[in-house]
Length: 293
Image (cartoon, rainbow, N blue to C red; front, side, top):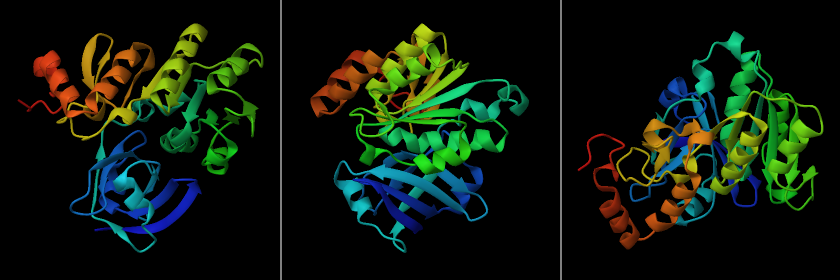
C-alpha cells in the first residue's frame, strides 16, 4: 500500500496527491508516468508524474475526476493509501539526456493546457535546477481551472496565464498567446513543449510549424493500459507505428498524425470499434510490448 502524505483540491474536480513511494521517487524523471489503482478491483490509471522528492521518498500526481475510479480517488484523504503505484514507466523528457550547458543556449517555451500543467511543472523545475529558465503559457477555460500557477512562477522564466473566456490573464486560446509573444512582443524560441488535450496540441503544432519552432508533445492522453499490451495508444509518427506508453509519451509534434490518433481514440471506446481496429491493423494492433499475439 502507498500512503497519501498530502491531498488537496487544486480546482473543481482536480486533486493533488503526494504519495509515499520511495522506489519510484528514487528512479523517476520528468516526462515519465506511473500506473495507479485505488484497490485490488480498481482500474489501472496511467498518470504522468507531477513532481518527486527523492529525500522524502514521495511522488506527486494530479488527477481529474472523470470516471468511477478517479471519483474514488477524489474521496481519498491524507493517511489513506493507493493499492498499487507502479513506475516509473515511459521514456523521460529528452531534456534529461541533453548536456545542461547546451540547454542553457536554448530558448524554451512550454504550453500547458488544463491538466497538462501538471506534467509540465516537473520539466520546468528540472530545467531550473540545471540553470535553464523556460517560459510557460498556462491555459484553461476559466480562471477557476488554472492550476499550479504560483508553483510554476517559482521555477519558470516568465509565466503567461491564459483563459479561453478572458476571466484571467490573457484572453483566448493558448495559440493566440504564443503567436503574440513571437510576432508582436519580440520573444524568440528554439523549442516548444506542448502538453494538454489532443486538439490543443494539434493546433499548437500547426502554429509552431508556421513559426519555425521545434515542438515536443506528450501523448499521455491516449494511454490506457500503460504497458503496450492494449493497443490503445498506437499512433503514427513520421510514418511509423509507435506506442505512446513504451516509445513515448513524448514525440516530435510536427511528425505526429493527430487526426488519425483522435479518430482512433473515438473508435477504440467500444468493443466493436476495438475489433475493427484489430482487423484493420493486423500484427501492429498491439505490439507495443513486443510480445502480443
